[in-house]
Length: 360
Image (tube, rainbow, N blue to C red):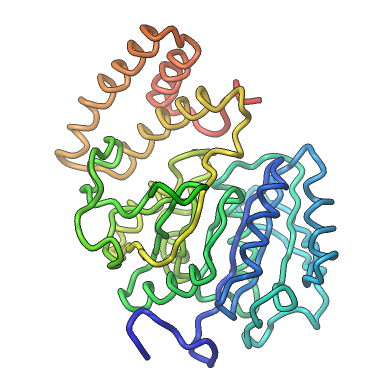
């Protein structure tokens, strides 16, 4: 077998569950799911989590699956206050891969489960609900791929990501992310030290653009995670993704905490995904929501994962860096955005977590 490639069948081929979160974005989600029907990798299933959509997303996704001959089932999940869950899986026994034998690629072999929640749990807790459900199965998968609903993947994306995980012994593998037109690379790796996670990177990592490499973090748009890494993270930190962050930065904290566990992170340059970018955020809130959450959550992440001189430098530098952003926004006449940054900074220092009270 050539390096970087996997056989298309066989008992040693890892199983994967792909998790897609939807929130009032069924058109993007259907584009995403269509790309998954073309994946070359034969052993995967899909779980779609609807995060309390107010449109007819659930109906649209269900109808699309049924009209295209895709195995589909609704899954009922009840959340508990102790962060556990009780799940009643209504999928028929004949459609469940209980023995881990895998599925053939293409529409006829794709398997979708839909979990519909009544409210918006956010990116982190939405994924947590699905991950907890998946890992309680009789035969949990070897890997879980978290995929944004406003993204889609190339045919070999999953095959290449799994190959990188195995060849580089990586617990997290990020994809090479391009814009929707495929003209610009949005993410190809991060070679900054962990203590500089909040600073803007002014250059791309050097090296062969087609050679897989280790990374400090990956883009949460498409990230493959080994099951054992998820379980180790939960044992150490009490959660998979930090639900207190609600939106933005969850994958950054997850990656930095994973590094602290002594595990490896890599980027697969041949695993290509395309991202429409921030389609899940309402148009009238994109600027303010992004600025609020990234400001607040960066402070929460920094104070939770950094130590020593990195932590001291962060505490001294970060507030002044954000104050410069506030002043710049005011000079540009963008007072709403300036106030969003200011409120994010204040809430970060105050330890405020969860959904922003001004989010619609």
